[in-house]
Length: 118
Image (cartoon, rainbow, N blue to C red; front, side, top):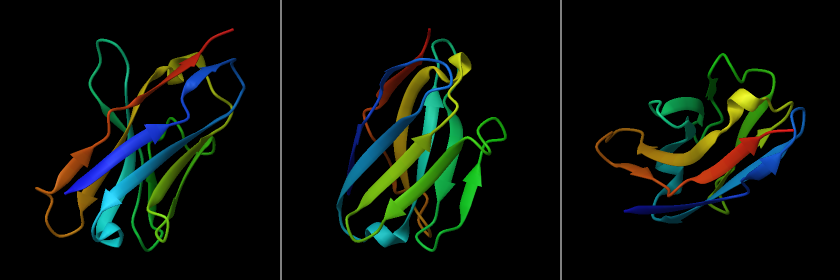
């Protein structure tokens, strides 16, 4: 079992930055692929970025060059640095953990809201 708690969302102007954090609890953090997903009102939840314990990353095309995912395996933390934010980035952002060999072990945090507006 993994519990995930996000923080760091808020209101920011276009062009601004935010750093989201996700604190994980439970065993074997390094066995999980960690990720961030976003969901805007009326839309499906979609991938933002993922990162393996070994450091392999994957980004949605819409955020490449603007967002950076990182993780601290010792502290069981995952981060999403969001730069050059756009109004279309406005969404709830959710932390996700998927076991690297048992994908049925899939956990979500409660989400944190990011609003990009003048």
